[in-house]
Image (cartoon, rainbow, N blue to C red; front, side, top):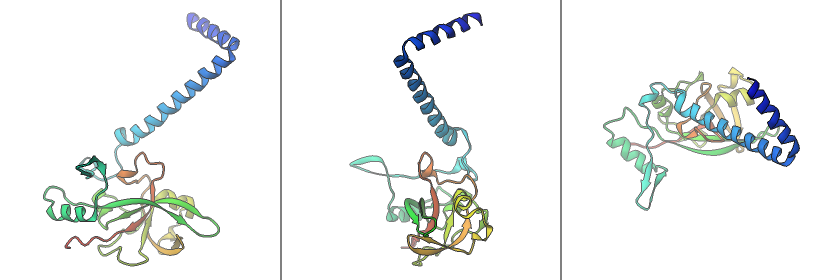
Length: 210
């Protein structure tokens, strides 16, 4: 213990004599600690903590790739339809995409992430809304479809009001009826590590018999 205290006193005196070096040392430590904390938060959410899905060890993500672009990339509706029709291995297959939209009410505008999801997406992930319901099989064919919202958005923007179900909210200048609120902590698989997770969920219709 005495040796450690002597080392600390010596280090303190050295840093006082060289303020520029001391500042660089503190900055380096701050960056290192920040980077470590950021990496751990991602690893903890993706690798260590269980995913917020029922039977999460049975959930898989399917990607596409091209001959001249071997990296993982998006899936077309035609690919999804083909895989859905030819699937003999998985219990079900869902499709979703991401983007951003604006709550355009004059008193509280806000830009948030959104996702378009096939009607079975939440069933595939084993997720039930805490309020309301999910989309039906024909959802997504209306010009103004029903939407679900994330738990954090519900708390932040609507104060956790249970009367949000059945209410219309203004997004990009149109009024969309809210049919459900998703549970706390839910994110789509693609949202892990994203700075802007999906908080509004629109239905997308795909004719799997086409």
